Amino acid sequence: MPTLTAISDFIKHAALSLGFNLAGIAPVQEFGELAYFPQWIGENRHGDMRYLETRTQSGELKRSSIREAAPWAKSVIVCALNYNTDQPYSTQFADKSKGWISRYAWGQRDYHDVILPKLRALEDRIRREAQQHDQADIRFWSYVDTGPVIERVLAKYAGIGWIAKNTCIINQDLGSWLFLGVILTSLELQPDLPPPDRCGTCTRCLEACPTDAFIDAYKLDASKCISYLTIEKRGSIPEDLRDGMGRQVFGCDICQDVCPWNRRAAVAAAPEFQPRTGGRTRPPYISNGGQECPLHTSLVNPDLEWLATISEEDFRQTFRGSPIKRTKRSGLRRNAVIAIGNSDDRRFMALLRKLEEEEDPVVAEHAAWARRKLER
Image (cartoon, rainbow, N blue to C red; front, side, top):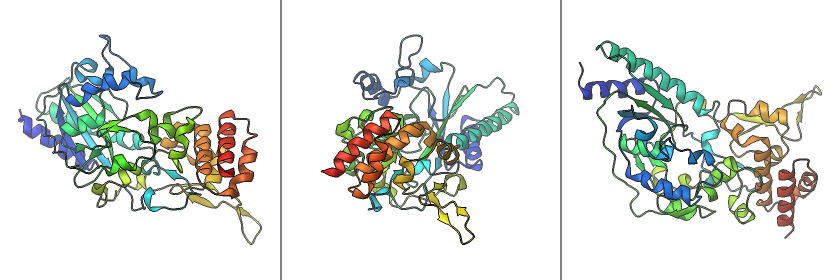
């Protein structure tokens, strides 16, 4: 039988060989960071994300305890994949007539579809290795964003990084541009140690948030977070938060963009996370032969008019296999209209008047708000 250290080292080496940038092992315990979770839910800081209220049969919040959700689990394997690219940060672009899509959503493939197969392959390698040592009936539960315990807490105790004041995981070498994948297992493994918190006295992330979503350091009011507003929130956005959304149309990178630890963040090698191109802009380019040619726009700094008027077919084709699908066409158009209202660009006035006549009442309502704002 291999030692706990030997099998644990095998797992981490196997994870790296499968393309993960980091891998570590966390113990199964009651993590202190989750003690605040019930209060956070009780204060409705999660907004409309009702799935976070899911409870176990004993009445405990499902995401507050591994032992409640998976009593058979003895260890947790956490893997991280860097998604940073060599593109500038949102804070380095000054053109308010263009939108901003969060860095993690630029890629050629949805990160769930990249990470989960790697986790399944890691399961297979662990199972084969264990069988060589007469260990059978090993149980696994792999997930990306859908599991019973908040991933960043597990990542801390697996040694991946520390939980920053903006509640993101930061690794000293890779920064915070990390996707996390988790495997709960019935194997007893040697846990890693959590790294020290290296945020120090820095509060740049808290001060940079335009919607004041941070209650305090390490405490986020998700109902005010731009990522929540542009992705999870359905229907009308509260008017007092629209100005602060700026030109963000899907997610938000601001609190990570200003973080000093991301100044030297490594660039991802994975081609899946390089920016894809979108649909054609307006007007289309006409070639010398009279043929209409699609003029593509990158998802980095996308054209707001294109997003605000995107057709159902264009939305489906452009964002197939992309996390941007989650906001749905109506939500993406609503977000683009808010960004137009924040652009200070009166050239959009004719477009907004047209959008006020939209059949989609959400788009129409936000277009009327945007027009009034540009008229001031």
